[in-house]
Image 1 (tube, one colour):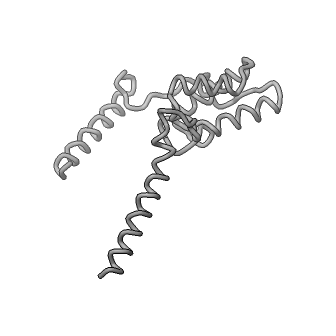
Image 2 (cartoon, rainbow, N blue to C red; image 1 turned 90 degrees about the vertical axis):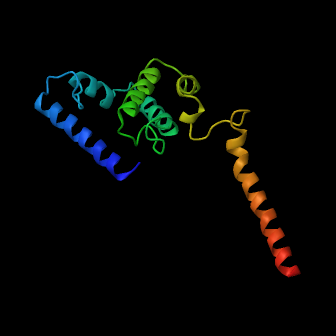
Image 3 (cartoon, rainbow, N blue to C red; image 1 turned 120 degrees about the vertical axis):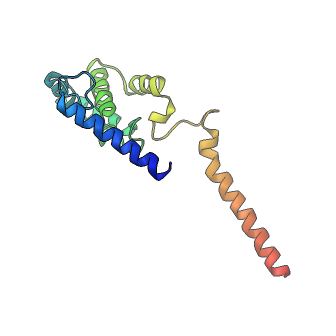
Length: 151
């Protein structure tokens, strides 16, 4: 993207921000406040036992935020992470097992949501690529050393 395109994009974003601030009742506002009940239901979980709470926290730490990609559901503050924390809470509260919750999340978001994806046909490249790269670099290093010795 060239410099003028960046400047134009910045101007567009600035203008839309100003118009949203000038007319906060507009449905096209950039920032929409969350309903107080929604915020409380997402952030204030009431568990039946400490065991249930520990399970939910451990499970949320094992699941990756689809938006942040580098944070788990506990660390992330993105809206999708808050929704998924609520989903984990509701499923634990409903008596679902950890496997059922993980199955629901992987069905919805794919194996990407797992920090440790399973070894299957879809993830062979993911698991084997580092090993193949290491072997390839090793072969190239050996060939380079042999070539330098001949010279």
